[in-house]
Image 1 (cartoon, one colour):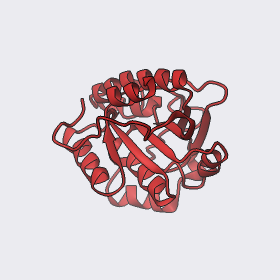
Image 2 (image 1 turned 90 degrees about the vertical axis):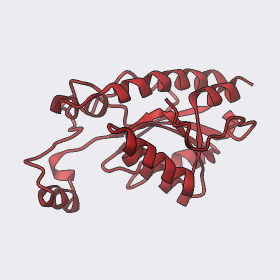
Image 3 (image 1 turned 180 degrees about the vertical axis):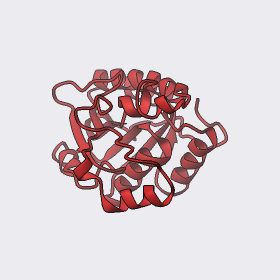
Image 4 (image 1 turned 135 degrees about the vertical axis):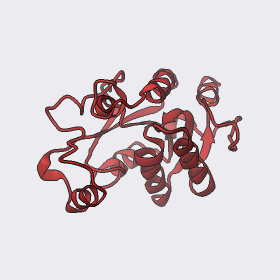
Amino acid sequence: MPDTALPHVTDLGDMIAPARTALIVVDVQVDFASKDGLIGRYGTDMSPAENAIDRIEALIAAARRAGATVGFMRVMTRPETDSNALKTWMARKGTPGDAGICRVGGGGEAYYRVQPEPGDIEVEKLVYSSFHGTDFEQKLRARGIDTLVLTGLTTDCCVDSTARDAFHRDFHTFVVSDACASFEPDVHSGALKALASHTSLLVTTDAVVAAWLA
């Protein structure tokens, strides 16, 4: 559900006009969202992710009807692509072994409950931001897109990093508060508060759908 303690824009008008807007679906993958993925196998409650994906599915359908671009971001890793900084950080904080999240060929990298269609943007990435080391910005510019409506997993990590990098690249950023999720409510709310303070406007699924229906 949206965090009603935070400011939301309810009347979007033409701020997310479909011709120049992309709905961005961040890391809705088995390892991040399914009870059978890496995080779920540790006993994590995956209901926040499932609830967010319910709304993401509605947003994808609304974007397609309105003619907005849909973009799917996906972590795709191999042991040889893990950075030294990542491995050292994990070792120093006591994370045992090789987490191996979203390993190519392992199944955890697969999309979960969502699927791109021809004409959608797809981006494969190694780390949190969808812009780091990818051609995401070029794909957006080629379509005349200057506005991003961000959804996905997790609010505090890859959604946050992508929103901040988008802002740094002069994109207008909107974060759909009830179509993102973290695995702790206070972390989700804290990330939304920070984004609302510095880079993004917060919106709800209902507000976005209404704007695209108008």
